[in-house]
Figure 1 (tube, rainbow, N blue to C red):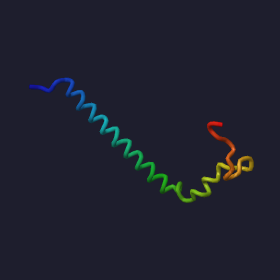
Figure 2 (cartoon, rainbow, N blue to C red):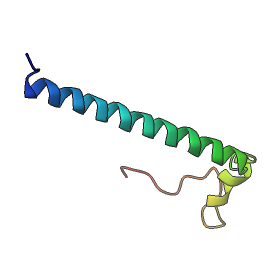
Figure 3 (cartoon, rainbow, N blue to C red):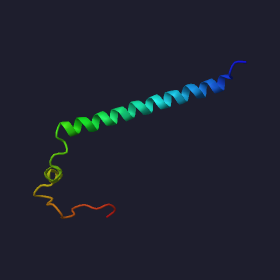
Figure 4 (cartoon, rainbow, N blue to C red):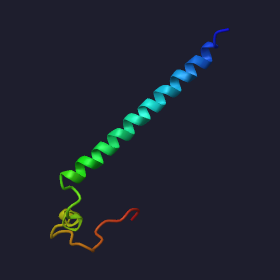
Length: 67
């Protein structure tokens, strides 16, 4: 007796979900490895201050949500 078409569809769907999950996991591991080897995590303090300038000094709240 052959399996019902619905069961076959769900088996195929689960296989696709697992494959996409493994691709996503592999991509995330590759991205973290690349960012570490290219020096993205070397000086987090300096890089975190790069968004501030004279108009918005560090430690002074200029905008809030909700106001």
